Length: 245
Image 1 (cartoon, helix red, strand yellow):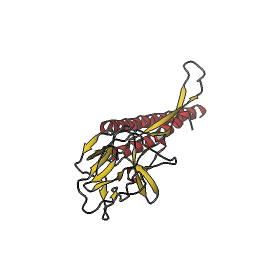
Image 2: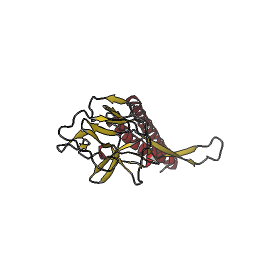
Image 3: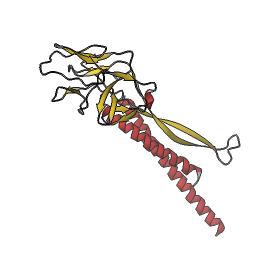
Image 4: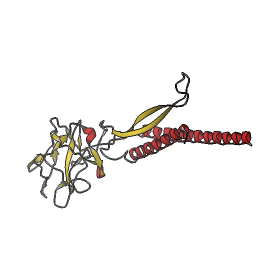
């Protein structure tokens, strides 16, 4: 296969994965606490025939090597729900799941039938002591201080466990807007929990739609290049056949 076809194939494969990343961002633009992802590329220049000349052709293969997560903070929206919480700055809530501890920026919490503070998936939210929070049936006037301490009219219940990581890019996203990590977290020194608020996704819809348009245009350009190359090769075969006839 000629270099032109190799270049086109590498670009098509990259665009397909880029389209998948963009589509996932668009699908989660309304997901609380979601962090958008973007692709990282690596270019492999190759010297083609005649490439040793000043005006010789140069061929570059493009390969996507990873996706990087945009960790910038999303905007806050007020909900009026005392069990909705957002973290200003760095930090993650700690949640106990059947697969172990998970970490999330999604602070849309609720009470289950037993009065336990849980996520929308029913997983307990943990305190500094590693224990879940339980509210009594008569607990009223739920308050959350900036350091994450939960209390009611009957007194304090404990403080939310807020953690961070030495390398946030090592976090791996799992289902339900949660993350897992192979390295142990550290308790956050600076805590700034905001009650009655939720952190919106940091996806920029206009930017993502613009990227979708760019990917579509790139697909069309590659298709034109492939068609032109196919026609060139056909022409070359016809000319070769006519000279040897």
